[in-house]
Length: 382
Ligand code: FAD
Image (cartoon, rainbow, N blue to C red):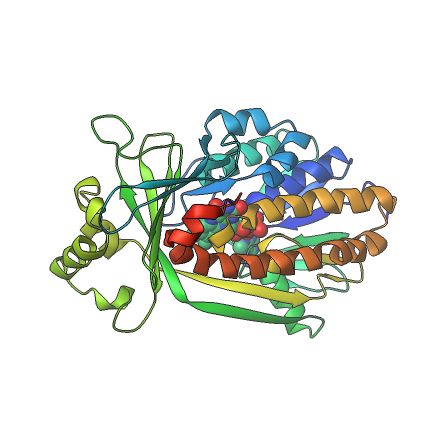
């Protein structure tokens, strides 16, 4: 193929938009297909990871397209963890010995919108919203999309799946028998709750990632630019102590009063949030290969979704884009060489962070509260 052949990117989430920017800068025409309507004109989905921690790995990618300044303007740096015991004072644990290193709380929606704006502004990028990929021939690159107007056919020289953990591109490759996958779901899910501003200001220290480690459950809270905090409660999905076990407003209030007493005065909409916000699933996706014949490739969560306890899924997806760009450089834009090289370089790293994220769940919900840990250890992650 020549440099002028169109590349299809499926999924205008974090990785897909960034990828469109990098490809357009290489001179490719890019068709970016997204199943949702344009999020810049619609309202945000309730209870879906409203903010996320952006670290140096992700920032490096944004810097390369000149978007770091805009994104960091609204970022809230978190320099450590603030532990909330059931009783007693909050305790701060710095992420670094010097105390000046931070991860950044960022609005997922604002980040996605900034990336969409950046992609739309580049010549050669065409974005088709309300296009859900439902068919893909991995030999020809022929795609079928469901749209409000009915089924639409399209084709591209290369099709890149950046369509998230439940990737339809990956599903198509699976259906053709050219890929194997494993999806390991945790028996924990997550639910988002809100701490609104208190008297116009943050109700908790905005310079920390707040953690309520409770052994079999855990809650975290990250600050938002509007001075609210988004809390994420991680808890088993089924069983006697689980999301399913709190069936009435009284049971919800009683549970939080017992296990998260300092949250009660800070979260006036606790019961409503609990009853109406969905329980999200958490899991680890592994698959191989990540590409077929240099024609179809996967990246980001579509290739390697991980549990969120290291705060690195999006950062890792951004790193993927930088590495793919590097592979295209080194392979003179020969996709049949670049895509296997990309998998070779990234798969081991993706597996490493998948395992570290699972291990960090145990650390965050349990070990961070142990006296030994507090006495000696300093870490540089969530
Ligand atoms: P996504 O962001 O999922 O984007 C996929 C896009 O593809 C979406 O826009 C979707 O609508 C679209 N799509 C899906 N199917 C189709 C289809 N058939 N046709 C067309 N389009 C389609 N990561 C961090 O780095 N830091 C954090 O602090 C952090 N916190 C997290 C907290 C929670 C609770 C969760 C669940 C995740 C967290 N993550 C975090 C992980 C992060 O959200 C993901 O790793 C990241 O969103 C992956 O980006 P992506 O672009 O690969 O996929």
